[in-house]
Image (cartoon, rainbow, N blue to C red; front, side, top):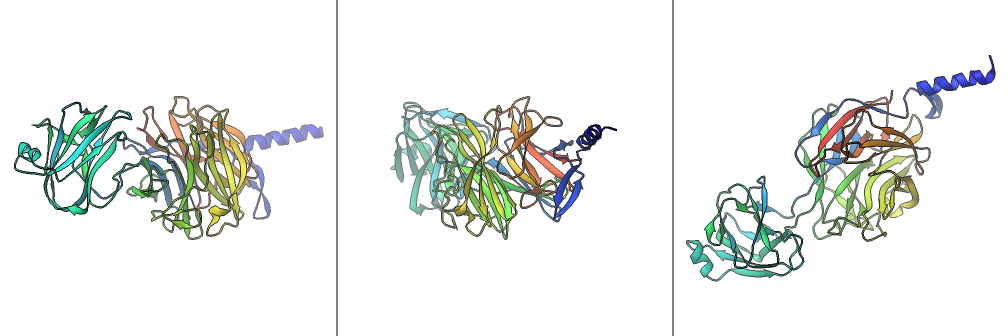
Amino acid sequence: MNRLLIIGLMLTVCSCSKAIRASVDGEVTDSAYKNIFTVQPGWEIYTGGVYRYGPSIIQNTDGTIDAWFAAPGGTFGDRILLHEDAGTQTAIALNGADIAAQKFIATQSFYAIAVACPNWNSTNSSITLSLYQWNSDYASTIASAPLAKKVYSNYQDNQNLQIASDERFAGGNYLWVLTNPSGTAGVWKKEGEVSNTQNFKNGEVVAGSYQSFLLLNPSSGAHYWDQASYMRSTDGGKNWSAEKMVLKPTEGTRDQLSICDPGVIKLGNYYYAGYTSTEDERGLFNHAYVARSTSPEGPWEKWDGNGWSNDPQPVITFNGDADAWGAGEPSMIINNDTLFFYYTWHDKNILETRVAIVNDPGENWPAQLQQKGTAVDKTAIAAADHCDVKYRDDLKKYYAIHTASRLTANSYIVLWESTDGLSFTKIKEIRAGLKPYLHNCGWSGDEQGHINPGKQQYISYAYGPNWANWNTMWHPISFK
């Protein structure tokens, strides 16, 4: 038989079987696993009505799985709510002589009363907040002198307006009052009644509860947008531990608006969580940060530019267009004593995953990051998002996944491959077995980001057509 024909037949057989020659631990072997995975039937692991997305998944040596997700944020400070948190929220406009007020009973001393006030994104809305000691009835109370009063001129939309005292207010009966609204001032109200409160508009009792709370200790009481949640599974993702919110913004620092897009590895005794945050109220001009903990649940200390503390500073600082999304969405792996730090760089007309490395990473490895440029160029791919990168020891190659046409009925996952972890080539669009409207996917690996295809691996993503109301899917994947 012709030699070229024989060679052609051999190549055809190899192509069909996808048996790939690879060097593992110095020995040349045949890998029984493909470089491209297929998605198996999966199940939902979150259906809570808001979101858990952008999973970072570690499969431990004992078979347990640790997973971190971006989750909705919360409010700074120890609080006692004076409204029904689960109730439907309505913005109540206040105009001219309108007065909104709430009587409440404080069962303990408190630092401040805070009231949530919208202004429909205006920049010229003002209102006065006063606090009174309750005096038998509404009319008698507002006829007396207030304990404290504060005029909020040009307050921010949805700001928590406060009356505070360093000496603390004693437990007792009180009335807070909003008066003198101008611009497009208002107050938020929730459906549902709360014991020990009574709500008024223009002196008349009204249904529902104005959105207010007591702060027990000094705090802004400000809302932060996102935080990182954590769960553990012992049965391949069928059942999960009770969810915990484990990594949160630090009040009064550069990450106080949000902690989003966690990407976690373990190096030595520490878990390292990369995350996204911004100081821009629009959610633009993001930067990438890193925190560390000896436990997957925290507590965490954050990189501060020189070491680890509670004064977070970026490890990747965006310096592009002021109106661009910025940098963030980290994914990390460790291979051959080198830490690879991948991150999104989304500037005007540029959407890339860039990479920085650290050789022999030590205690303060973020200070030694060496920029290596663009690893994945997604600029020409419509509605692409962040890459989650892993390493295959059997193939000696790096692999990255991300979603494309995200949040559409035609969404899919893109798979990229690299021999050096620095420059990737697109090898596959994966569409079969996925839900529509998916976005922000992640896949499992060991604590240093390595995939063993001989063990069951998983992929997870959020999906759904309605903004910020997404379920989370969990699928086994196969490399056979």
